[in-house]
Image (cartoon, rainbow, N blue to C red; front, side, top):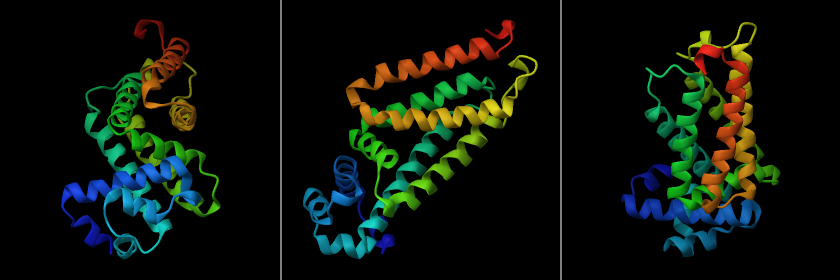
Length: 205
């Protein structure tokens, strides 16, 4: 009864979400237990099964919830008047990193999503990636000033490459802690600056 879970008071609901994010993020899907999550959240194991029916459905709920929250934050921060492709990339990256700094359990969970070897979680991960690609594709393709690119540059291919790079960027978080985020995002920005130098016309650099 996910509806019953979502009707809980905010504090209690977020406590369960945080406990589950931490468990899955640090132990992985296979080793995380409903008992541990329940104990950390201060609720009974029976209630978690009542809300979600199974560990798999809880994992799926968390993945879709966190993905939607992050994409919603990014959508809200992007200004339609900003048409520069690389400025949009920077805004999206800064927004995502701000969320990860504020919620270390979220960083651990997203690391696990991209590194999770358990086949039972594979379908959920594929859905998250597809949702991310669809939303970010819309954010970065629509309204971007493609005239800034050098003649002969395939802008659509660059957009797709940016999405692939973002996925690789997230997968690299497997080696990163919250304290490393600033240095890591700095490296990502340097890569984007290098691409801009090679892809933009001189007058837009």
